[in-house]
Image (cartoon, rainbow, N blue to C red; front, side):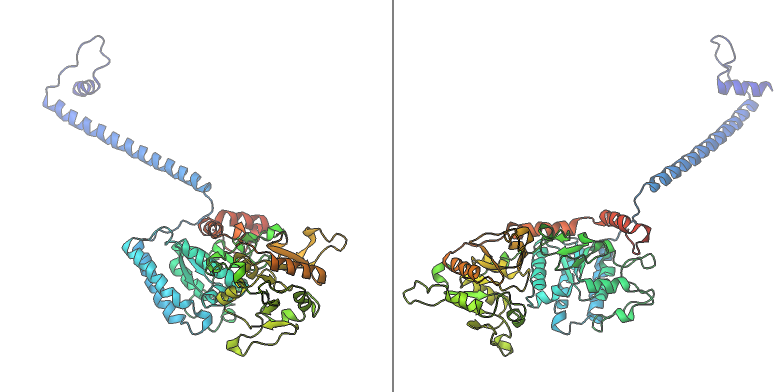
Length: 514
């Protein structure tokens, strides 16, 4: 016992002893052994204590992590995919597109552009030279993008071509699709890089409807889903999480109605409909200066003494004509001859019906107007730039063509199709052929009420005698359109999509927004 007491006192410093007497030295062999055993016990106790502390710390960290997760927004963690994996995905995608989606007609012409675009993306991924913008992939799945690249010139196609030019200027990677299944194939291979997908409404509806029981009837024979095995799907759902996330899907829609389940923000618009209709579709607009400025501005002395009647379909000159038959001819006759020494009479020409290459031009039902047949876009702009006025006749509405004329320095006669009969000057009640130009004043735009011979003649004479410079609405300038497209591509739309789904559907929203 004495040895154990001595050992304890030696280890603890013999604090029970009064005074400053130092602890007694340990000298015996038995005492040394006791010290070793005591040190071992002390070390064991320390190890136990450390283990307890470590366990407690781990439990605390788990609790803190659980609390942190409870405040994390519902968002699936994005897997980290390195550039070598992405390069491999690009190569596989190129092979699958060549196998499943062979461009076999004009409508699928843009498919031929995918391979070089994907090759460029693969090269910069492999060499680690991709710029941030190049790593943003845009899937252009509306048919109008392919048609625009094939030379089509409908309003939707001209709008699409503008978007292609702007996105290219921003150096994004563009990949073309013509249906919901080739768009899905592209998305599933490039998912970590895809910023947005742009679809037509009917293609989006096919994608939304696709599941195990409804898929074959939703496929098109040239845009097959034969490559998809296992669970059938397209839009991301709980049972098909690899599908296209709905918050990344935007609908290409020329009119003011809503075309997306996520509402107006996901419905893209060429015009700022909020200015006159209250529609709040996302206005991205289009620019025309990259094309119209290719045509030189013509001085008044270089222009022919003529006007161009706007409208490429013969039906616009029949059932849908805003004037009675003969009114246009009488208005043209009211314009004085050109002061050129030759007394050249004023004439109206049109570019409606079949073009020369398709058996045209056809005779118009409106007397006194010469038809040249439909023209390619550049030729049409050149024709207008050498003329003195573009004359609207009621249809088509909301076309890019009047903007092209104004950009070339040619005024436009805009038809007011309906108005408040009690207050004809109340422009808020006007429905115009080109609604966005209802408030634009002469000498750029002359608003003429349908069927009003006096207003038509006065406008035609004023437009012919008054020259203008190029005019581009500020919101249609290239840089303004570019910035709206940059916002579309680079905004994280997920929080807004989640809020919209919660506010409008509650817990009944059928798609996966995360």
